[in-house]
Image 1 (cartoon, rainbow, N blue to C red):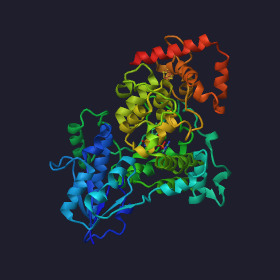
Image 2: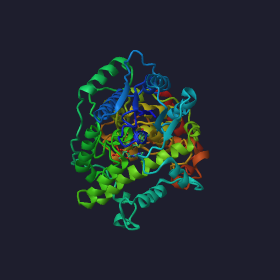
Image 3: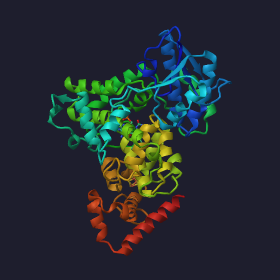
Image 4: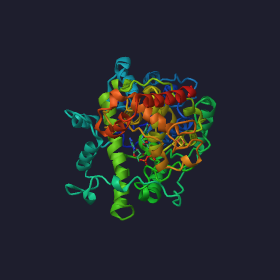
Amino acid sequence: MSRLRIILGDQLSLGISALTGLDSERDVVLMMEVMEENTYVAHHKQKIVLVLSAMRHFAETLRQAGIAVDYVTLDDPSNTGELTSEMTRAVARHRPDGVVVTEPGEWRVQEVVEGWAALTGLPVEVRTDERFYASRARFAAWAQGRRAWRMEHFYRDMRREHKVLMEGEKPAGGAWNYDGENRKPLPESTQPPARLRFPPDTTTQAVMAMVEQRFSDHFGGLEDFGWPVSREDAVRALSDFIDVGLPRFGDYQDAMRAGGPFLFHSLLAPALNLGLLSPREVCQAAERAWRSGAAPLNAVEGFVRQVLGWREYVRGVYWNLMPEYADRNALQATRRLPAFYWTGKTAMRCLREAVSDTARYAYSHHIQRLMVTGNFALLAGVAPREVERWYLAVYADAVEWVEMPNTLGMAVFADGGQMASKPYAASGAYIDRMSDFCSGCAYDVKQKTGQNACPFNYLYWAFLIRQKDHLSNNPRLAMPYRTIAGWTSERQGAIVAEAEAFLDGLE
Ligand code: FAD
Ligand code: SF4
């Protein structure tokens, strides 16, 4: 019995379930570069290069292992541009007895795959993606019957279940969470380490030329491309992070610095999301670093929390709530996304830095995403779907199952508190405390109103005033709402008017 084994662009792991039991005499692996996948949003050029180059490297690895690979390139003149039509063309070429695929990471692709059996008349076996700590079913079982799905509770269960950073039944070091020691501003004198980047090899260069030609109107530049595109490079990237980033990862997890896009972050999300690294191996590497004394517990726990906690948790939220989750808009936000998200042309330095890092590296770190671009979109009342499509387009690591809950749930509170117990709304004071952006900004972070005032300041208060009906009962916002209650309605109206005038000016 021969099978067509399908490997999608984010399934580049030798251990992927679609390859289990492969018969190298009879089976063929199908890999498809299709226009549909490269244009459902206008992805950053680096993201397209990363995915296609990593796919080509993976195909080569399979061939070297003696596996037959049918690889359809994007510039193949007979390429029809869609997963389904390419799959049916491959069925006609190979006449398999069945099709095997690992469950797709995204809802959109799952819907596509669901139509394949009826279309081909063949059995289509969709296998569980076993690369995660928690399967979709495991998360669903965890979530069932809980009123609130708090990441912290899920994370602790995962630590116990998978024996990560545990000492018997107790968390390593006696505490589950070392955030109290983490998240410091970066002292001026502290220099972030140089990071291992991967200059494009000939395969990547060929993809770059194709991308420059076919996707010239997409966002971002290719000059600074440095992502690992093979398993070997991804392993080197992990090792570099463990050596130079991890020891201070926790301390400066939330810090931001102009001209310092990477700081002590791992830069591993693209490799993880493509399958070049597994979450288990990165958590194990971090835990080993702690046990050998190479990294402190606050750093290692902070990192494990992101991978074993947040990453698995957002995947569970996504699969439990899709497809309705995509349309959530609890705060009824309707503004258009300001043009500067694409051009970087704004006098607000924090936003300018975040957008220019994004264009240059297809990267900005979590706090820039959450507390700068995300915070602005939240305070400005930008329509969640517009914000969400932007994040999905512009980052090398962007895949919908992780991007969407982070955007809708964390950044713009569109899910009304399913994930976060309060919106991540902040005035300029937070950005000033955690970065050096404000000192070189055209606006004055200390001024609350007026032409020179930092827009985050009046936008913050105007947001809370506008959203009083939705948010004033939230106990975690009691303090700012007490402040507002002490203001006259004229004062409140003036703040809202100033914010509206600023936002209208952006359009
Ligand atoms: P590090 O800071 O070094 O963190 C280590 C790893 O932990 C990351 O590689 C990632 O795998 C995981 N991680 C950290 N935070 C999160 C989180 N909140 N949710 C899930 N995993 C996390 N991450 C993506 O992988 N793809 C996305 O499309 C994406 N979109 C985001 C959109 C918004 C609005 C926000 C606020 C966050 C988003 N994140 C996304 C989460 C996070 O910002 C990135 O994972 C991280 O910045 C990637 O850089 P890094 O590898 O250096 O991460
Ligand atoms: Fe951003 Fe305001 Fe600081 Fe300027 S002053 S960098 S706008 S927070």
